[in-house]
Length: 67
Image 1: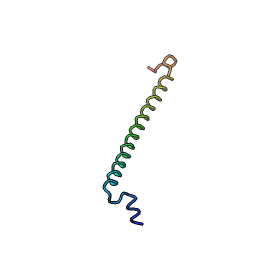
Image 2: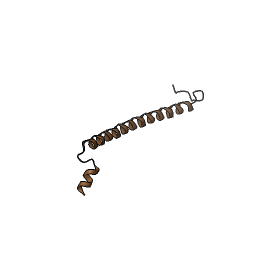
Image 3: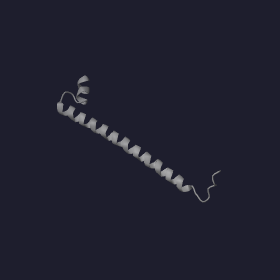
Image 4: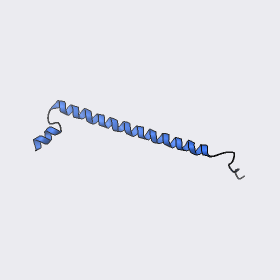
């Protein structure tokens, strides 16, 4: 069983270990890019929401400020 598990995770073959490391790094890179894009999307959505709120306020019908 241990031999099967060791073979599954790459064993001692340096080519498999290098490929596994490369793939793990690629997954980390993609996860980082996904987080960056999600943050950018959230910021854009917040800005769009703010713009819609500001457009809905009609300055001509707003009550005058108290003096």
